[in-house]
Image (cartoon, rainbow, N blue to C red):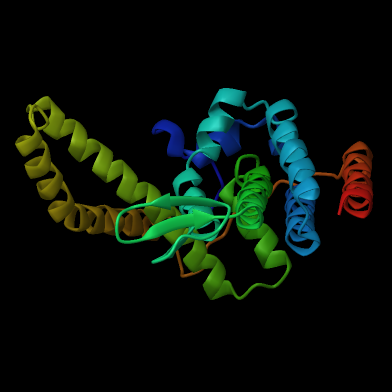
Length: 266
């Protein structure tokens, strides 16, 4: 099956839209994936706020400068995991007790919420590490079409079943999102959100019908695959892309910077 631009341009969740439009699409996909995973492992293994900050800065810089993604769009994409990351950090930074404690304490009647400098520092390090890891993954997803990622997994001999399930699940996310978007637009055109009560009613109706409509669309997509001689094996057209020596040099230079920062600031 030929890897082509699928046109998922529905708002800010259109990862494929950015990947196919990225100026880094001409880069070798294996090089991009290996580089991003290497720095992701550095962030996890070195466990240093300075390293996390350096990796976050350079991953974002590469995607925005070499990839051509605007800072505003990149910032909006980085905000997607913000709620999950903040909730995780709050659980680490603050604790509950029936008696006052810690350096910073807030009384809430029958119990206290408190924190100290060490817990706040650990929470800050977690937030920075999480965003740094997300930036490494964005280097892959925002610059590499899904077909090329699948091709890389096949090269390293990931089981065929896992690869195809991953691709199908990824595509079905867009099917669900597109179905929900169209149903919400239809509800808005019929004043389905003109009041709080109507909004809740429309919300319930949409999600009660979402599975049925999505399954119908998934069946239509499967029929389309069979009409193109699908025999149970997803095949992607892969373009051979050479690795540029300057790109390797840049990755090596960043690796040196990361190790120097880890030694002197870790």
